[in-house]
Length: 230
Image (cartoon, rainbow, N blue to C red):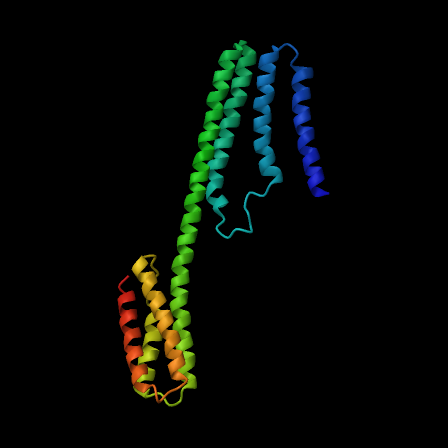
């Protein structure tokens, strides 16, 4: 029902624009009157977009519309102001249809350029958001792997204190790893995660895997040391 009333309101608005120019501006030539109707309808369409459609898509976490809004509003306000001035000047000075058409196309160009700049800004905001998600994801991956290793050594009572200490130190060092989107850094995070999964399996079978556990811990320390450089 809400959608029906929105559509009805929009259509009535367009109807009022057409009726107003036909009934009130009877002295205008038909070609100029049609041009003014089209221009006014474009301005009205921009207004409708803000009134009846959400500016921010809450379903998308990037919220790129926030970064787009400033440029978009500036472009719309500039276009509307320039277009209205051109219509007023055209009526007062009785400019020819050709001149008014050229001026209105120039004003429309402002709106189009503003829209392109708006979309470009939105793409940048979205790209930054996805980059941040990658950064957070990699760091969270390391933290999750370290925490799962800590859980595993708690359940493994036969593990030597030296190895327990080394694993605890790794879990502590993960906190100081800087997020990175470098391909090699992402690869090292994946290696660390996979190797930590292997270590958890070995810890369930200690002490018969003691040598292998020691070697795996050494590999994990090496991978983590390399990752910390990024």
